[in-house]
Structures are given as structure tokens and as C-alpha cells.
Length: 99
Image (cartoon, rainbow, N blue to C red; front, top):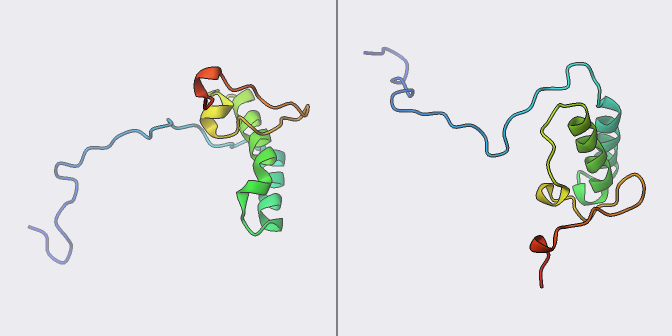
């Protein structure tokens, strides 16, 4: 019996992992430059991420290349149509293009 507090909510509660997995925090600031550029872009654009997709892609590329998150295809991350640092767009496999 619990006095002054709600009964335990953990009874029958089962945790599930996130859909996209989890990844470690950037404790050593390996991608802090890219993160700051992205955050500055958000500030300049009233938190509208549409204008900052290039910075978002650069940040995620840094995280993937440093092993801070699992590498994934750009179209799965919603960034397949964003130009990369070289100015080229990532090709989307034909199975994901609309006909």
C-alpha cells in the first residue's frame, strides 16, 4: 500500500527500443562545429528547418563518419534531395522514386 503517492506504474509496463535505434552523445565535441552551424541557421530562420537542410545533412554526415550514429541512406533520413558539400544531390534508388 502506498501512502501519499500513486501506486507503482511499473506493473505490466514493458519498455521498447526506439524505431531508429539509439546512438551515443557527442561527448568529445567531434561534430560540434556542424551542430553550431545548424543551430545558427535555425536561429536565423525562426526555427524553420527547411532552410537549414544542408547543415542538417552535414551534421548527420559528421555523426555517421565518426561512428556516433549508424550510417543510413539519405532518402531514408529525408535528405536525399539535398545537395552535399560537393554540390551534388544524392541519387535515390529507383524503387523509391514516384512514377
